[in-house]
Image: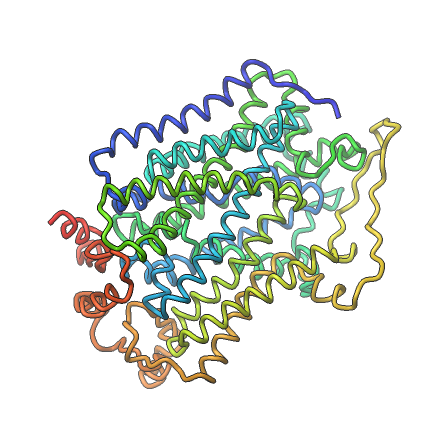
Length: 617
């Protein structure tokens, strides 16, 4: 295809994004230079407000994968993607009410510290290694996506763009720590929304208005949203998205270090919950913008699809090609869109680098060297940011081999995030599960989810389950049009028609439920964990919701955990005994910084002010 180059104003807009993002890193490096502790660098001193954290959460997970992949998915498969509206709501409610309270009140920095407090060190290390692999692979996809867009619209060297992205992210993350990441994310979130709105306004105007866009989408079967087919092999149905999507995104939000690290950086638990709920609004806004961008793009290309006509070589190039068509006479606006795509990438990559540095420092470095000075700890944290920046950028080469970015990204999260979700669920919801059951469950979940995902990669699902909706090339007028036909599926084993054909959104469901089932069974076979040995802070007694009418059944479901030994606040105040014991078990230098957050009766919330006072004592 013919590459349409940037005008001067496109370069100005695009360069401004990088300059401002880097400037924020420099600002916080200078501002916080007198607070040179690993705690300030990795979790912002645990005194962040909910506003910037909410924007940061949204920007971190609504990456270029969303900006490029979601509109292309809607263009090809229809607007059923909007059903993630339901999945996002369920995920945020479960995260804020089930997982967050346990992590926040236990005063941890790495979510995997919880696994050692609840089980033992091998379980913690196994989970940490899986998280590191998952995040590096996912970040590679996220780095590759906007580089592809930039290559498509400007002719820039693809891999030069990849490494430019990695360098800028690593620069401001290494300099400014979590505060720089959070505030840069907030700025980049605004850029993403402005970029989407610009495309929507101009695109719908060009198509004859919003009503015309919806009418053309309806005629093209793009608005058949509610498909209640229960077949788990169908790529996107109501049940696949609402159930499989919830499991996938709960693995991303509920137990993901990048999310929890931001939440525990808030000064109170109430601020952390508010950050999650306001983040939900951001998720909904970005989702709706992406879906309507896909519909607008279909209205524009409904009679000449650039993908099947051979004008572009991959579906992920649809959105940048559309933008260059739409704004061909408006210098600066193509640069705004590419800045929009890169905003999502910069925020996600920076969040990943910061989270990887945190878990590596807390789970490995401190375990080996528990008496590090604050200054040395900070320099090691910065060095880890630099190291993971290089690694994540390098893995982008693998992303170029994984097909569509949206499916590749969610598949990676499903394969690793599902078993991880199952592991934390075993710890928080099932008091009787022991460390043997937890470790065996994690390995079982990983095996099942990787088995189905790798099988699906080798043997693609039948076309009847995944083939896109009809696309027209009637008015293209090209002589080199190629008609897309379903791939020939020959010599396939029987399992490829069932197990390997499972929707990619259910990889997480398989991994999570497999982990929980194996963990429960093996715990019963090897001897259940004694509830009296488990601190109540580490268990979330959700059985209280279902057994509120009977204290006898509530106590039975507690499995010996002493939830009734006092109020939750009394448990917190009396928690020094188990916490001191935990410190001797952890041996990772947490010391006083990991003391349980205090309870503020006026605010009716848990906060980190007690930590601040003790740390400065």
